[in-house]
Length: 461
Image 1 (tube, rainbow, N blue to C red):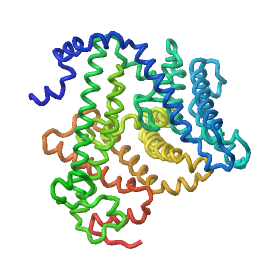
Image 2 (image 1 turned 60 degrees about the vertical axis):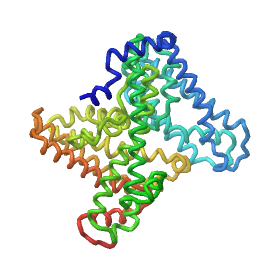
Image 3 (image 1 turned 180 degrees about the vertical axis):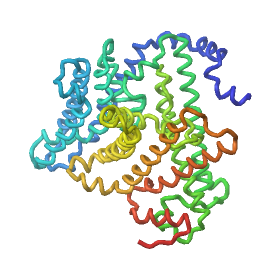
Image 4 (image 1 turned 120 degrees about the horizontal axis):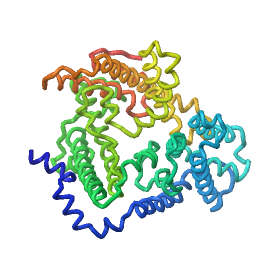
């Protein structure tokens, strides 16, 4: 009970009052306007620092100087402004764009790619600039998507360009999946007074501490289970449990390895991936909370999930939100009339649109260097194992959602033993399908051979 109370220190009224007393001057100075301004200025720095990295003169045989990267930065800033204006004036956009804002946004990206594919590398400086813009676009795509979503839902009033800029070029980091989504979502969790800011900052400090504790756990897993890869292994005399990584077992197709060792390895891989996501995600959300945006965690105890769909919601929340907002919900809504008499088929289509098609598409366009050079099919081939993973994931989520629907809101069978069995089932499902998501370069057949070896089946492909 005392440990639980300690872990919830950020909700203790006495701690909140103490923090307000100690940090009163800072809390008063950090008004919402100033907090947003700091993040927006930091966002400008991120844009200037990161954008030139996408400008790769080595890929195009045109002499490059400082002008090229500068023009890339200016072009990206200009595009950010144009999409902001489109969102604020959403009602005045062409009818097709108003009806299909996300499709229109993605069409811009693909138009850039087509121009690159149909022009020659020596076309001039404009192509270099377009090359840099297209290479950065997958990072911005979903952020612009949330911006247009805010305009579509009429949530742009009272907001400034700098407010949205801080989410499009986040100083707090993240990935192509925007942590905290867009400013419309962030503003719902923004601290409006000193007490709310104190609560948010304490919650951020808790996540920062938790991130470091999970990092230690990750290093223990690496050093004790896997080894001999870090300082901890040396501290304990080089002794480890000798559990091979899943990547290594795939490379040898599970040969000459005891089945029980392979099973331990896939469960260790699952735990490791959860820790990896949580460590990074906690740090990003901690920064957001310290700046007064008390948003949900990116990873929240997925290893305690009792269903596949619950694990999916907890594991990588902001990626799941992209799939839900831009693929699942639009598909589910569009099929409302067509499949109103076939609700199961409607659910199936929406789940596969998100977890299979959307998931594959998201990871395809992450291969920026491949996409800008027109190697789309090469990219899909490189993703062949992940595509199968996405298929299995979508199937698992669909079955899980269907089971929950058919339960009709009734709780699952009670009892600790039943709960542990449900958790074990979720662990096993995700540990098994992750075999097709470890190590992009491993052949599909090697993964299949390893999978079969888990059940004592020796199969040579």
